[in-house]
Image (tube, rainbow, N blue to C red; front, side, top):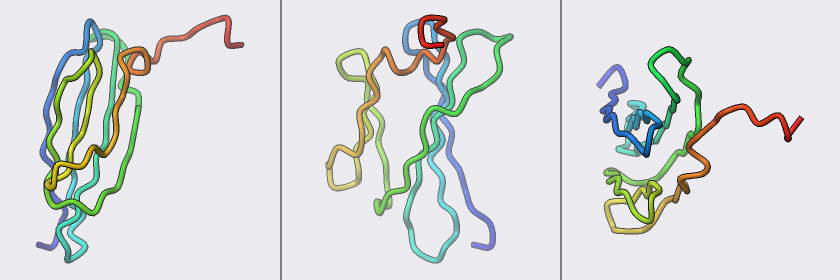
Length: 95
């Protein structure tokens, strides 16, 4: 494989649109990476939420507890993104 491959899923967590991309970088070994983008509305720009390299050859996503969980091929939990972390809106109190 000369070029990497990506599989993309689009889901909604509440009113936030989420793109889940599972990427194989064509390094010669089957190791997937995960890239997650979010946006609040169709007019909003996509924002990078997470990048996670793994040693797994397969990644499965599940919605649990209102958030997003990624599991490796062996069933190990790779990460959990809580629902409050998905909304990347501007909070003036943080400034």
